[in-house]
Image (tube, rainbow, N blue to C red; front, side, top):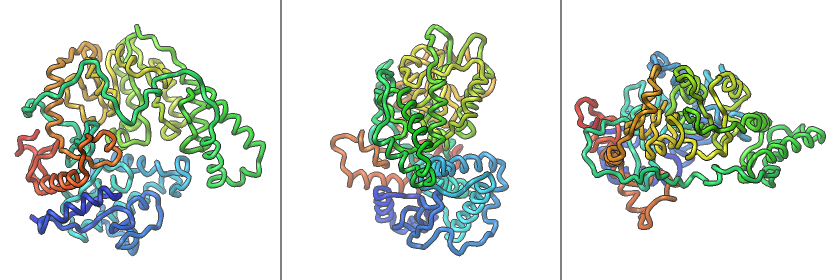
Length: 501
């Protein structure tokens, strides 16, 4: 069957992969629709931003009427969870988190926009007889998530690619929930060497985040962001010098309560940020008793793909903590550590109030060393975070609540109500088996760099032209069902008819 492809490919790098794919695919693949920037059929980010930006085919929402093409999605039993996921991703462009934001204001606004977008996506897919939809990353920017949800509701084949933290390797799957799911017993591959107790250095993490030390003071960048807020969001405040002075004092107090390496207003200023950081200062001083039995919960930064896409209902991280508390053995505690990069998103006053209502929770300082916390924990609990991967490397069990890439490795437990936490804490992780299964996992990855930022860990002999060709040829084979996916069998073949797990 010929493939009629719709692709989400934003940016020069992804467009180059797509162009090369079309060069080598011949008559097997017909690119019908390309979501990208102004050089694509439609300007994709503008959809989430609610901006009028044209692509080659004009405006995505231009000349469209409601047809009910999205009724398969609306009637789905998963509609409620799909809606929540998409709205969460839309919310990252809200006025409280972006200077140039969309104008959705309330629940009904979000609901209306979701229905409009899902109907238009469904119309476009049906009109152009799309059979396959390709994503170069996990959908996590609202428009791409709705595009994915509609494609699944229409029974289309979807191919999702996702870069790994391992140099020049990425995974593939057809469903988000397949991520990390495989049977290690079905894979025969060389073990992946892991020095027990070692920490895999991640280029996007900073060692200073695990340190306290001298506190800071207000920065030039912070003052610039404050001025940007006034000019773009509340220009009338420029005529209120008393309010400006009081706000600068509040900002200065926040800087003085945090380590000097943290510049809390370096990227964005909003009154909600002030409120969040003032709340954090109240909670960010919990004492750590390493002799106490505890579960360590390092919170994810939000908004982030790891929660808003991979977490399902546990994108709400307090729900994760509440679920742990429901089955917590007597005498145990839950140590919660805030992410040092976190801002006000998903951290309103009610977030802290919910946490304070859980008697077993201790909110430890955000600069407490995460390695030491996991060393002494009964186990580490996370939505999908790499803290779980770091834990099992040192022999500490991990519990995941979402689709974690390492979720099928030894020592990892997928949350479900009623688990025996004491039995989990007693787990002894066979390090040799961990290395073997990690080798099996990585043998399912594809070679290449599909995300520009991951060029930071590419090998010295990295060849961009060869990488482009390798990635395009792999995508071609995956789309045509000539190569197994990393997770979930082979595209177009029922999973129970494949040996890929």
